[in-house]
Length: 278
Image (cartoon, rainbow, N blue to C red; front, top):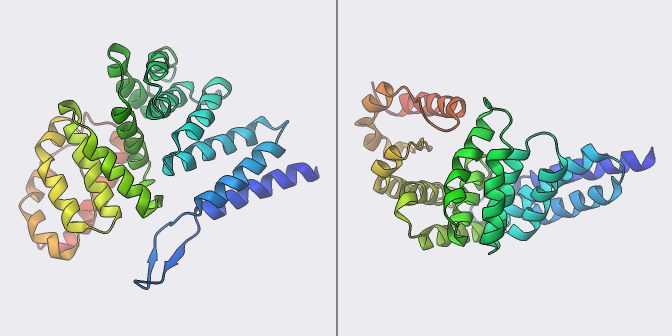
């Protein structure tokens, strides 16, 4: 009984350390969700070791270790965690297979990654689940052609963006992500590349660069059906005014994660209404 309590405490400590807010002393502002990733990883690893006979707690720990490792761009540890989940968890082997393949490819093992990408379709069980639909759609390309390290790293950053984890990344890691995005030279992912670069600039506090980057790839983003949304400061409101009529006319159908996109778009529109006179 005491061991189980200890496991739970370690897991809770990991969550607390992962989401602790810290003060930025230089700018005297609060940095949102600046994570204590290393401390969180230590706690999750401790809980994983203690939870020998508690499969559910092990899987929670493995999931968090995988995510924290991806945030730290430690793709080897992320791969190890997601591969175990793919083999052991009953929740969504399809989704875990995709994360496994992405992280495996990002480590440099692109041949092994392609084998796992081919498994994603076979593990597609919940046909109406948007996460599994996304995983299958993204893995399809690499069933037919070998992935590259750069494309797998880009795919990992995309997952972090979609799960709103980029704000949890440290500035050095965000800069490494930016470099990785710039290094990708593939016309089929230009839209995604600029979307992620814009999101990274935003997290780094470079609002002007974020807007310019997204604007540069806007046409390609729309062609690729990626939803564009970002917080826009009052100084940029006049740039948005001419695009509002187009946004209101769009029904936002045919996109990945439509439900999430609808929520984010309407939240963004509500914010814009306060900035832009109707």
